[in-house]
Length: 235
Image 1 (tube, rainbow, N blue to C red):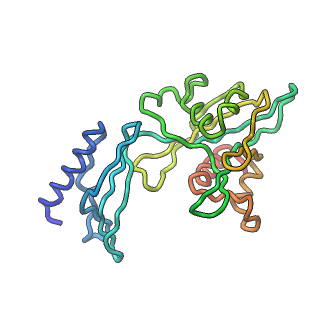
Image 2: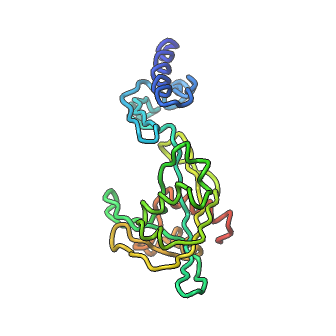
Image 3: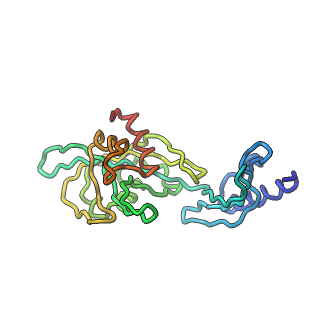
């Protein structure tokens, strides 16, 4: 691409960024085919989300492959949550277990065991670790149901770190959510069912290639669990 073509293209990209209150991209982010980089050649379309983040679909030139359309999401903030529940129904502290959601993945034709995740608005970032106002409570409710949230007590919420996610220009926050389960709640069968596992057992299910029915394979869940396990000493 010529310098003038790059100037026009980066101006079009940054007009979309300006519309959404996002930081401008430098022209270097377009890539350079001559250096064997994926080069952005054109903006095909863009889509705006409720948190004012935007996904831009680019037409790109991929070295040794050819033209490809690639979608990248900018802005907004995402969280992947490590929920640890201790069942305490009779006044006795139960074993802490990580809660995952069991989902049927059409694209894989198989069940998937995943951690909760969701988007967090910019104005909610300051409240992430607030046990009463945290947007993490909304993510827990959306994943496991309001019945689950009402059954929890003594919640503590702590940021663990960040995780880069493919197809996103921003990182995901990894957030640890600990709570006691102080009353029974409905566990829906099938899609959306809660699966509780001790941390050490859960880590084995990531590496176990033999048991295909209970393996944890979803990539964001796996990466978040590995990073958390290293910090908390689960192995």
